[in-house]
Length: 442
Image 1 (cartoon, rainbow, N blue to C red):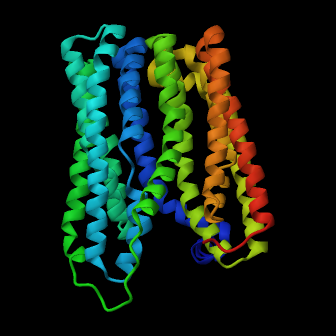
Image 2 (image 1 turned 60 degrees about the vertical axis):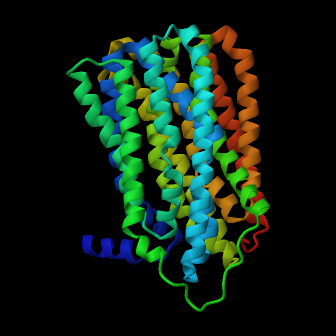
Image 3 (image 1 turned 90 degrees about the vertical axis):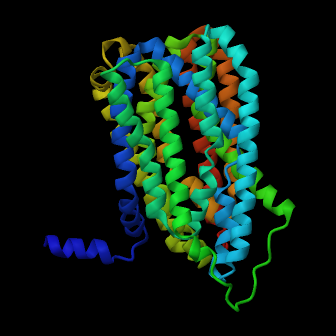
């Protein structure tokens, strides 16, 4: 009986089964990272306390926000425009595209270094940072900005080397976990954790490019006799970069800018409580993102084949699965949330529990519509998904303006919940329109 079920699972051509089967390969790597992140989060919060943890996360969030604004993510462009070169054997053109992407990413990183150098005195005056702390922040920022990882990720993904890609990503939580243990038993300071976080980024950066260099002979092979691929024009290339990075920036603003705003207007302690709740709520979401990648591939096939009935069936089935699993996870947060916070970070962080419930509800509402954005992307309507995200961000900004001054961190949490509801409703409406009139994706 068990053997038959396993055989049915591995050989089934049902669309939803294929999505889950492909997700299982990706889940293991993400799962390891999520588990390690919970452990180093516990070490971090218990070492620095509420205020210290809040100040540390404000610094990390501000640096990552600067990186998202100025240091362009190039991996999508490398995959989008580079994969056709590899298929036709034009490795010279692929190498030229990779160099272009590397220089664009590096140039943005240099600009971000300059911006951080100009902003540091302002932050130092507001939070009373010492000279040594300012140097640690500048050092951490420089490593993050100058570690050109996105281009390397794009090269590996274009070459279908997802195993190496996953290994490079797994290095970051592994180094942070190891460094957090050492600091916990030594002298834990904000500057010390910044060094560990910088080291994790740098080692991952070196490992990614080591994997790229190890396979350089594949890229350098003579081109085949197949018809050449037309290179993208500069406007086309930068237009693609603009829209993909705008979508990435929208996600970073939701996750990072809010932490910085809470820290500036309410204080590091409030920022610490908010970030702990946000990180616990999002740990589930990060694992669930694994489901979206194979779902996007499956939806793309169905759109390309104009298989309306199977497309509609997969859409509603995946939506039901996400909604049911989201309801179960929210119930778990209600029943176990306080226990989780106490075990991970200690009783001084228990004030984060009501924040956790609101942010958990926001995350789970987003999770219930996890397949909506991949569906719009598969339907060649990525710009519509971006509109929904921007509408959610607009609602977030307006709600925060009204609620933050009076209700502090709880007001911000309610604003996040409202934003998630609006974004998910819009994605759902746009997705229904997409499956009502399906057409092959461009």
